[in-house]
Length: 318
Image (cartoon, rainbow, N blue to C red):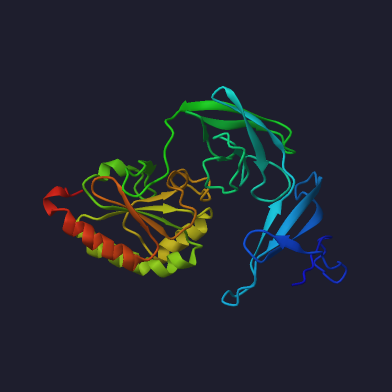
């Protein structure tokens, strides 16, 4: 395998030398290289940014349309955050890769909440705290009040106390949530649907599989809703135009949450650790998580089983 990198960012590889590859441990057969990148921020100040980046090239898979790769920021601002009387190690994460830290889009910090000195770089991890929305530290919610764009300091303020929620586990109580229905403006709460099987469906207008699933999900609802099944939709769209365009082609009769937040900033998405659009979380009539489904056909089969297990007299009409 050979590789080149446009390290001077001039869109021309002919003036860039071949990079030196080395073996990378995961996945097996992967290679990687390091590159120093420099650019100016796109704002009026046009400040210079210099970062070292690692590019990981995964093994070639002929079944995939193109080679797969991922990037890692070798540089990050490291510090500590007070959590329940102790200083927890933390580092800032530039989620939108623009070279500065802001509380407007994509950025956040990873905090070693469990004290194991290990970080799983996953924006759906409970140890990732997005700056754009209030986040949980210990038993309280905090929000950012000030943030230095170079990451030298930040300030937090507590906004509320909140019991820590556990990730959804099959067979255990599904995390409760509430949202304002985009269509009617009324508050919708999962707990109010107790006695009904409920499908919590995460989708987005930009999601190709959601587009394919839309007719099947509507058919499932039309068939199952008279028998007591409910669907609650959670949109991962950030672009309202794309959101409305999807609904124009696929009008959905069930309640919909639209916050304009990406999945790692969406409060319901974070609660359910739903890192992809097109996921359907099935909650049974007793409020327990029954399973996670990515194919409407599989969801339909399981719903039929649940409806047979639950007498119709136990399902009140809404």
